[in-house]
Length: 136
Image (tube, rainbow, N blue to C red; front, side, top):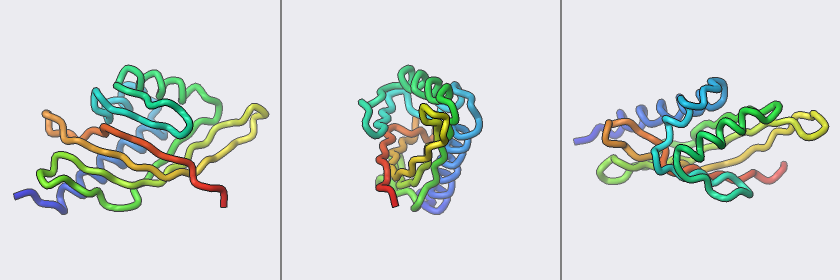
């Protein structure tokens, strides 16, 4: 029998590690290991980015944007499939970058990630989509 509390804590920890690495780590290769090989990321206003090779380029290009920073934090515990091999999680994010005049712009968003337990036992994000929140 699966210990749900253990699985919740493990996936929240994995998600927090992913978010921290994306925000401050700047190690493109490490960041992409948090996604599955067939992952799909759907950023707002852009076509989906499919697979680790495309995601590697997306992350590397993002880190080249002046002032770029991204943070994300889960807003609720993950919800699991009956066999505890899939889960989804809601989150809030914040993306910052410099506009053409060099002014820092920060966009707040909310998103949904889908996670899959891979054959090696590790949780990897297989789908990641978000949208911008309306200005307050």
